[in-house]
Length: 370
Image 1 (spheres, rainbow, N blue to C red):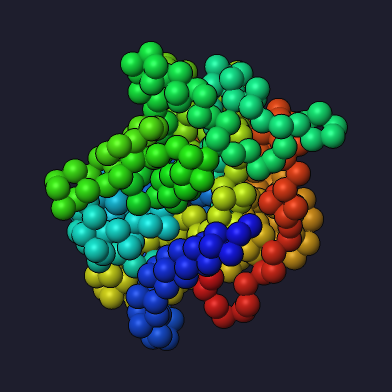
Image 2: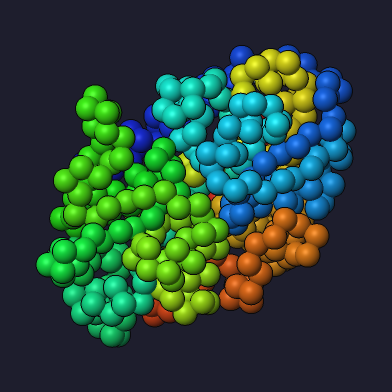
């Protein structure tokens, strides 16, 4: 990775982490008492990284803190954020950029804060089978005949140029304007010589498609595979399990993970309004120990961890809890593949990222929210 890339990723990570964690520090200084509001409704989007909430609910970690929690799936990130703002949801699984975006007035203005990060990385970029058929001709092979990774977006240029020659737009989906998916997809495209488009709010244009070679649009995560299958988009950047779902449906190929683009980026956080945090200080602090029940490695792609409270087969147990019949529904068929991105690696002959899935990150320090 170049010096510029390392400096850029460190800077972006520092900005996001500072923005998301600094604002909650004054709220969490009071002593913990009984939760002022024990009955909570928490929102989430159907993604693998909602695992901390599902596991805490299934294992009774919320009950251990005197909280009676209802988990409710939301249609998309905008609906989720709006329902937190209006108070219909007490808190939610959020994109790391949503508290910052709302606080500066991007979209709906609101004072949103977060107490802990729910995961790092976990996204991938997937293209349709037709796109892959052309891309693969422009990707060098390793000595063993497998595609060389990381795959550059330069291999996508012939596809984009062919679409332009036909008078068509090449379209890809991302989940939200202030999502890391949007930033990662734009970075990958630009690094490969493709213009992902510009934003020009000073000119009243917030589409992000000015002068674009590749036109990006918002698509809710669970709808990504079907939208690509319909031909509305030719690829997308999304979190798991929706990259693997394209493989299982036989409609697409995951080409790169966000670990190869932005290692250890903050991906999802738990967000509440500042007013909620001030009104329910003890309630918020009762939620913090729930995050510490799950070592960081469990929250990062459900990898095994010998000290996890779920036992030695943490990965398997976590998958069964998250995708089981009693938990909020996600596609369960890919559980047999062994977890996030396993099937993607098999499909491409092995991404072989050191530490992307199997690294055991340290558990959070006692008494700290991470």
